[in-house]
Length: 363
Image (cartoon, rainbow, N blue to C red; front, side, top):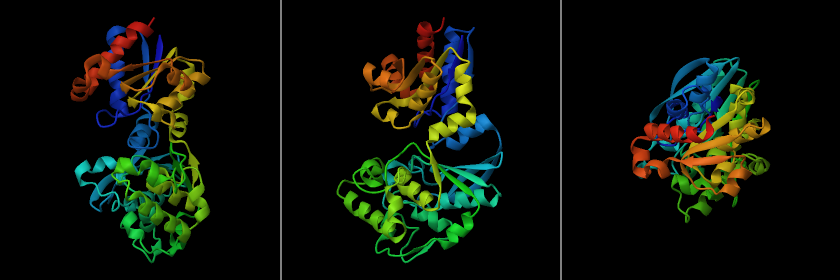
């Protein structure tokens, strides 16, 4: 039997590559004769560059950039076939700061601008920016500053630095990116502002209180008024705390991150040659339908008329929702070994789950 193993990361416990390895090892314990192909996946958030590098090869350029609060932070630019890939979460990711030290109104995207500058300086004519998992709510103002934008406000001070903003000069930035095709790789189609915008939808997970959401959303409205209000309504402008907005201001195109990764790694062809597709993530829940890896892999499997099975840390969707996503069946680590064991030994727990699933699905 030919099995494609294409999981996302299990946030906080396993990278996508580690998850693929664990699933394959567990499966082989039960079905040693099956042929398994591991394809770690990503949707634009944390692990985007690592996943692409594992599948595409290419050269990694190590750089040091500003983290969400200005401290030096390691990053990397992946260079392959004339395209540079960067991951915004490397510079402004939520995972870079412990929960009790996060300051959602001060976190900045300056480092993302520095990553972009490093990518452009390699001579790449196409730069793909993975968006997701950010700690920031500055509308990409810091990124613009990192590329040379000037303003009457402090673009580098996070969302709170936008107080009183009336002017942003993007001429130096547009000169810097001239001749470069920019692509925003994001699973989010929210606009920048309003009830479906960056602050009201994603602010809570970054630590923004309900009381502060109207004020922060208002500051992003001021940023939009000082640049181009029409861009704020575009799908994806609200991605990564508004980084999508800043990229769209610079003429970036937008592609769903999981589709971009799937195309880059040739997932459709691998799935077409398989008998079964396995994918997974930490929590298989209602948000999985919003352009996440599991949904993207399931769609590829459905197009090839191949069954898709999910292995997850926990499963919070019912059979009807599962079928709507194109998933044949889903299995939970926590149901098998308990939450404490799943967190304490995630790789072993995932391998044990894969072995159990193989008893049902391997033939």
